[in-house]
Image 1 (spheres, one colour):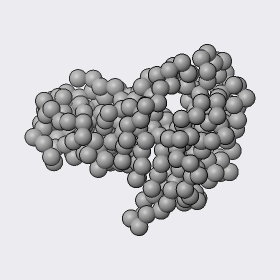
Image 2: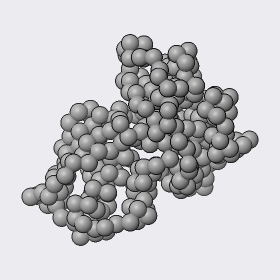
Image 3: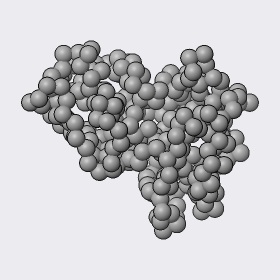
Length: 273
């Protein structure tokens, strides 16, 4: 069976406070990007546990720490699933703030539920996914959501972006999430993010912020430059996603072809829904 694992952008991201457990409380809206995806094939395996392989973009780190493998091991500890042969074809860039690895983990949880006919509910799969990462649960239902807490507390919201065009640009640099957090100053926004996003998209430029930009842009001027380029090309709103390094622009209807303007970057475009 082959499953497709998408990604997300953060529309607004506020770091509210540092918690006693070392994590931070956040307020962000996560919006699904379904056209930019990885492919994961899972079939019953002959060897004990999971056989994992990958292609496409190089996947760093030891196999046992890969989120696909960790998702399988989590499921095996909780449910009577069998051996699996799993192949990941990686297309979503890593170190981008797009949540591709987290989406892979959620996809494996959903896929194993289907492959072994577990009939797990969305809420059960979200609880499992939350054990693997702060934003992993979002990808189970894969619909626009306000994320609070560490990012694992999800409240579905109505946010239609139909008629707009999304452009994602990721430079050839990666941003360490730990480094981004180390230089951010937690604060409470003056108005709730949901109130900000209730305004027309044309107003978001002056209202909606990603707190990580203040710590990331001085260290990575190319990322800041991409945001300004997207505005110069007519974006109604542009922002870094997550802790970077991908930057996205939201355009009204048709937008100019941008590939030639970012020859040193990964570029993706889709019509939003």
